[in-house]
Image (cartoon, rainbow over all chains, first blue to last red; front, side, top):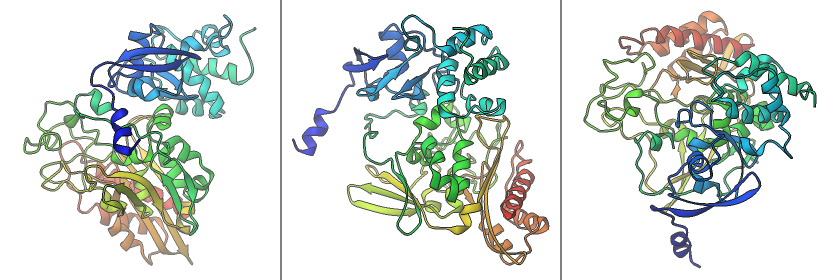
Length: 172
Length: 292
């Protein structure tokens, strides 16, 4: 196939087009326009409403998910650009019916009030520890600054993160 | 993407270039630094050769945005990001960038964050990039590819002053793509610093930032690099200050004189008259740290 033909074959939209997404180790096909965000595809088409829409413009962090193992903002990611990549949402964090240690720590430390930012906070916090930037409260605050909490539960969020960092797994 | 979300950018076509092999960050044979256009900010910041030999670049990257955005944002995209001026982004105010000839609401509006250097009567919007500031200080070169082949653009020429045409922000042609940013070998960069001053401690654009590097022999400045962010319509290479530093004693008084010379040309508005002094102090502090 020459370059021109290959390019034409790859053109999608502007109408709805089938998009195959790998979400939480499951392949799911949605019919969405190419302009639809990953966040809207998850929430409106796949009934995965754990990822929240706060600002929809990349400033609040409530929509934080993992794409290929890195934390990113689903509101600024196009669903169609995630084909062939692994998407993980808060719904994919628990394993075999057991909450992830970070989820348990958030509950134990009451690390939320209204709870709207919580799934984004947790998805960010798990990666924060993997990235190795949680040696002090200052470092936690800096590398969690992309997740806003309007209830200002920050001290409790940091306490939950410290617990998991230090090996406390919430008594499990 | 954020401009599409705000209804400011309305592209007919989007081309997903994320699978192009442009993510390398590596030392060049001549000792310079090659940064692929699709390398992510977070990856570049943590690459050992960047941290060790170009610390101001690493620091500027880590002080920008949030970790989620740094994971998503490419280096080429960073250079091409548009101003955060609220009058461009609200979609309705007069804005010569969005709608040439409509006027500039920032001139007599809420202009606390706006530029004091490189402005025109048509636009006073700042360029928001952090990493572009040390890149400008270190004479980076932007490499592009397009239908007519490739070319290399000095980074200082990559960002255009608003002048009479603030809607023209860069020299790229339609179909031309940034493929890499290269930083020439510069021993001076090894102890370069980047400082950022802003309203919040994290996840906020700069009111003023400064990238600085110095070479000092026998207490005298033999080489100086200084660039400012947050105060100008483009990442601002402080050439007047650099000239004033040449051969001067490496002390606070010289640094202050040099920074003041750079800010002599500042044009302030109602709400940003604090910026020249803040910029001078930021430059002095950055130069002082670079002198250690």
